[in-house]
Length: 520
Ligand SMILES: [Zn+2]
Image 1: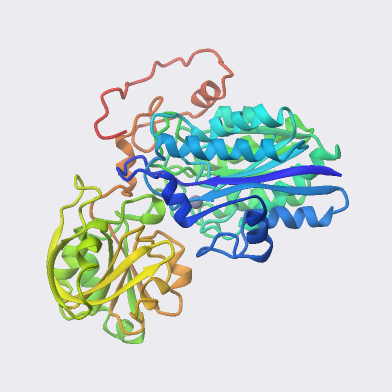
Image 2 (image 1 turned 30 degrees about the vertical axis):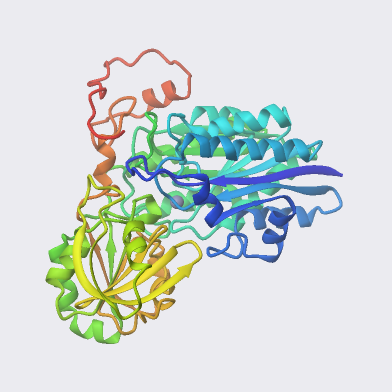
């Protein structure tokens, strides 16, 4: 019997957000060890309030197929909502628990480690590499397979420390279980000596491209099809394209590709290279441009019939909480209050301070207070409102929550992350999406699936915030970065980042970015 440990530490970091992620954020969302972790993964939900089955359930599926040869060993699973960088103490505590769990587990023959791949921590570069290196101090040279979200930023240190790296092949993501199973199969095959994973990768100086980056739509569809074809034909064990979380604070940020074969170096190199070329060819297809708040509200007002049949879903694209924004922006909220008059509008804002005030008030009471603009005061200012306190709730993941009626607005104020992705965010506090004209979400894509029954028109609104695509341009990079700068060739940077030290580039770096403004 061989023993394979499994663990998860996952959070997607937006380096521009001043809201630090602490251990409490993990503990209030998802943090399980040992037997409790095994129970959650086998019985579900794997992550409470999220999905019943995720990567670790997929890993256990793979183990079940070989249950007479493999014993799965649960270590630790910690997941927090996308937000600002982890506090150094938070990373250190998670790392300590992970290592303690591994030591307690006794002899380990291999490990599957599920990570997001775009996690940041205050003062610690590439914290996920640090975790991998720490794991190595306990498991030694035992096979170590990791999985990533496709918005991961791959680094040389990670490629050098792991035996195999696999990532989602869907965007919006819906193949968590499949990816966990694939990682499990590679780990099992390696531990049992049946395969010898061989990895090749490429990294591109590019943070945006591929249009909407949806796996089933052009221009990225062909890239995803190429990966699946290479896997189905047996050419590779796994092929991944990582489209990066652009607001990560890592100078070597960029899209990357990675291929894993069974002891076929040339094959891995070939597929990683093909995918990189395909991505680079799609670099000029930029994400869509979004409406201003006024334009978005006018579009919603004009959609009379559609509002009657359902609602207009309005994405606050500058304050996307699922991409790490603080969720406290008042730009769109202010515009909705003054310009969407007569339209019943559901909106959300995170404001722990306002919750503190509202918690001492009775339901039905008239209140006057500023809301929002407190977590990231540099990007938006508090909005003074007068309204009536409709209801108060305590909710898993969102913390204490209050509903405020302000004219035509129903504002859901949360103490914790304002993760507005599903209709239940509103319906659970008594606000039926059927009744609304406009429903605000703080999400880029997945809400489209969840709101399908209600949504008759989608409007993306850009104001100003940490999830504006060009907000990433203020970060520091290791050279020119597409599309901020003109970059004609990706191969020199790729060679440098991968440590291959090909002959120095013929052209010196056109500019240094040491004087970049912003928080970096
Ligand atoms: Zn992602």
